[in-house]
Length: 266
Image 1 (cartoon, one colour):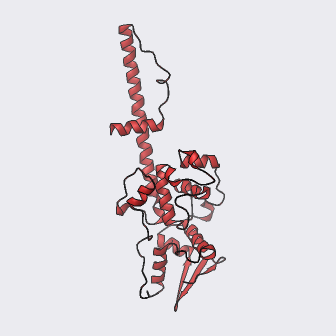
Image 2 (cartoon, helix red, strand yellow):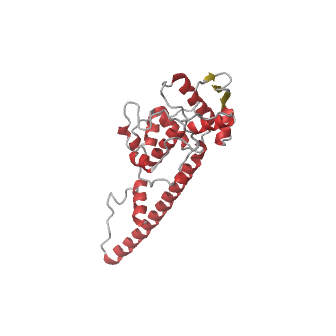
Image 3 (cartoon, one colour):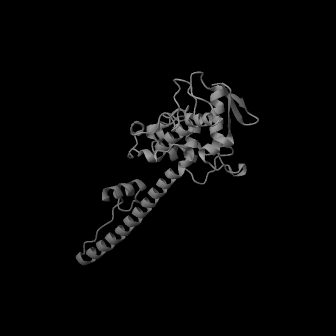
């Protein structure tokens, strides 16, 4: 397939036989059913910044695994291991899933934030442009399902031996890919696999529910501690043998400890 990039007009044109296929930012947004934000509302990537150390600590609880400017995918926090697969398969198919760099990490971080505004249609168009301008000659064309849809709409007929791709990326997120990423979560059901970009709300909702659960557990632990200390005071008064708090007793529970306690209860 020949592809001519028109940077100024922001379009990619390909002629296949007697048919012309045109890919624009708006056609990408229409395919994704994605409502593009106003340019003035976009916060990433232009103008966005974050301290490298803050970014590393946000994405992994094993900062030593970040080496030579790259993350180890298996050492990312559980949420970001999943986001890494979503971004790799749906936004950056020619990037590195196993060793995302700092720029990739920034994308994962922004993807998880509900208050950031990104024009993902422009993002995908730029990936296609980079594929045409700098991609290897034998590289597979990105976003195959979307391209197939555009070819269908332009009236391109499949030649004998062509394999049409109408159902998402050629390599979907499966239990195998999750196992390779060392994810502790259960493999997703087919109907929950994220197959197009604007479904990040699913991940954000799961994270929100997790945060709420942690807060409820923290409240429950605090209530239990107050009751136990009241009981110890009463026993100490009646037995003249009060319990003396240790340094460990006065330590605040970490979020990890609270989550582990909740898991033991459930």
